[in-house]
Amino acid sequence: METKYIFVTGGVVSSLGKGIISSSLARLLLARGYRVTIQKFDPYINVDPGTLNPYEHGECYVTVDGHEADLDLGHYERFTNTPTTRANNVTTGRIYQSVIDKERRGDYLGKTVQIIPHITDEIKRNVKLLGNTGKFDFVITEIGGTVGDIESTPYLEAVRQLRWELGKNALCVHLTYVPYLRAAKELKTKPTQHSVKLLQQVGIQPDILVLRTEKDVPAGMRRKVAQFCNVDPEAVIQSIDVPTIYQVPLTMHEQHLDDIVLRKMGLEPKGEPNLEAWNRFLTKLSSATKEVTIGLVGKYVELQDAYKSINESLFQAATYLDRKLNLVYIHSEKLTDANAEEKLKGMDGVIIAPGFGQRGIEGKFCAIKWCRENDVPTFGICLGMQCMVIEYARNVLGLEDANSTEMDTHTPHNVIDLMEEQKSISNMGGTMRLGAFACRLLPQSRVAKAYGATEISERHRHRFEFNDEYRERFEQGGMKCVGENPDTHLVEVVEIPEKRWFIGTQYHPEYQSTVLHPNPLFLDFVKAAIAYGEEKNA
Ligand code: GLN
Image (cartoon, rainbow, N blue to C red; front, side, top):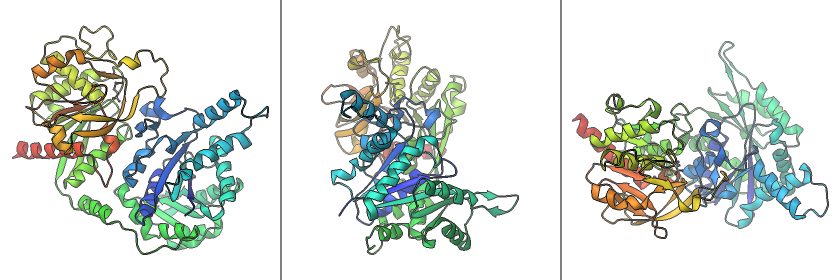
């Protein structure tokens, strides 16, 4: 079958959940046996989001092939259970970089290089990249930003051209917002009408409208929207707030989004999508009554998207273990030895978050010390693992002022140090150790048991590493290096076997946890937390 392209645009306001709608549609098409991928085009000038801090766009997600990506790619993977790559996330910066590189090489043969056609052609080439691999029946392309933004214009022009060129093989879904005015007690569709007008002005007629709303949009009102916007009445769908994003595929299916898409693209929908496993997850979610309380120690506690993949991994694990997740954010900057007990004693398990830089680091040490001494299940991820190592060096091995050279270049005990290949690097963008690497686990370790395997592959994003010169001392002291890279022998996992559950991973297991395949290490950690919680409260 020829590859079909679905474009998802947004209007009125940002943060409407284009990523969730794209992911939900992908889930439904996958459940009908099609091969689907989702890609995101971000209209900012950064070449990739790797150099953005979490205050800007939340977490930086990492793909298997080591691309630092928008966090929406995390949603795509969690919903579709299919890995994304560098080709799934393109920014304006990357588009321009590629066009400018071609110009410098002389590829344009003396022509004037312009937004149209050169930038739009480069966008179109990138839109089709995944489709041209022959691996996908559907390529869903989410266009970041909102219609009417100056920076989105070249993308919309590319979409307009592609729709023209691809005919029935292209379709546009437009997501808008229907606000409810409490004073007037009314839902308002005017912003939607204006947003569709803007889209029509740039030559794009949406095929399907998805209306985000907090209240039910009555059928009559949806018909009115259809009439004003030249859209079939059944193709005006509402996306009402639901308790969990994982329910959105079902609410979309109830309104026949998948059937409508297939018919509009010349495919006859056969039978029903197979959502059995997905529904099992949702049933578990709605029937859980008991809670598991996990503390997340980090410095971005006020940002709900900064640790997105960790939250989702914990949520998935808790759901599979028939528990409601009670996630408590604990600000690392406010933690001290004096208040650690008060802040942590209610936790069934504690996560020490990844991160960069000095801020909040001493609080992480206090949390780790308290958890280690009180034998609370503790899971350190990336910087969290490095902090576990430093805390152990200082407080158990007696290596005074041990540190990472990231925090203190003059530390007498550089138990965490810059990786050899990082020493000559000065550029910040895309230069960390990134992407999936193999890891060999010690067969008798807790991690190996958790994975049920001794050869695993997980994703990384770091510059610093465990300093091998100290390995012996740690091993003798009781902190074991139980996972290493089979080629470079870099230490990837540490564990204190005599503790209930005290594990640190240099890699980020949260990037590989999906609704249908929750990450084994998160499952094992939450299982240990549940057991500890029950023991504690018995
Ligand atoms: N800052 C640490 C490093 O670069 C850890 C990075 C992280 O937690 N992702 O090694």
